[in-house]
Amino acid sequence: SAVISQKPSRDICQRGTSLTIQCQVDSQVTMMFWYRQQPGQSLTLIATANQGSEATYESGFVIDKFPISRPNLTFSTLTVSNMSPEDSSIYLCSEGGYTAGEQFFGPGTRLTVL
Amino acid sequence: AQKITQTQPGMFVQEKEAVTLDCTYDTSDQSYGLFWYKQPSSGEMIFLIYQGSYDEQNATEGRYSLNFQKARKSANLVISASQLGDSAMYFCAMREGLTGGSYIPTFGRGTSLIVHP
Image (cartoon, rainbow over all chains, first blue to last red; front, top):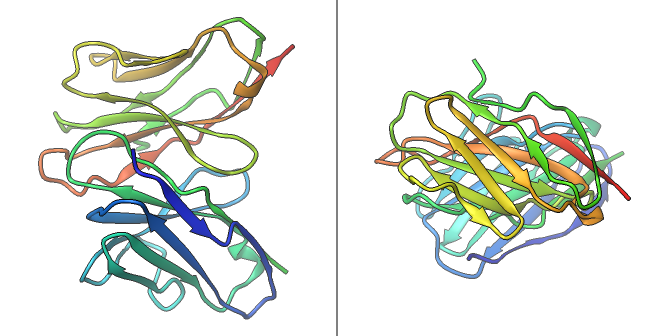
């Protein structure tokens, strides 16, 4: 099973600032996913990050607001830019692949924007 | 239409009793996977169990079992001998297109389980 770590685990940020969240997987994975979970809600996919190509964003999410990097097969970052209180959520990264089976998540980053 | 439906926003169970959390899904794919995750108040998503659409046997992992009824498109999670530590949100999820698709999972709205002593 994949072990995924995220940094930071939580942060409190001021409106208008940006935060970069790091996701590290202990093995090489083809695809990584970034999710947002707003308070009391389910998970919403932000984007899919493949190594060596631009991230693919879901409807309602744009690169200017959520730039993603994927420099290698074990690491990705998500930046939440120009934050507002509406961005207060848990952000989770996940690994994924082209085969069926388990899918593991990082421990999440709990973001509060004041 | 929702791909994953969890109709129970909240469930209560007595410690040591069994509980079933419902999940129905909607897909036209023949090859797909179904997952259950537990999310305690800490926020992490803990993988519990996986069922592939071609698996003939119901998946089991310790006290967790998945009651897979393909014709009814249901994938209920059964937790036997509930423990206080089982109190959490539970999410059902599905990945479609396992024969060449993007493998992007879709999540249900979740069920909050509270285990009483």
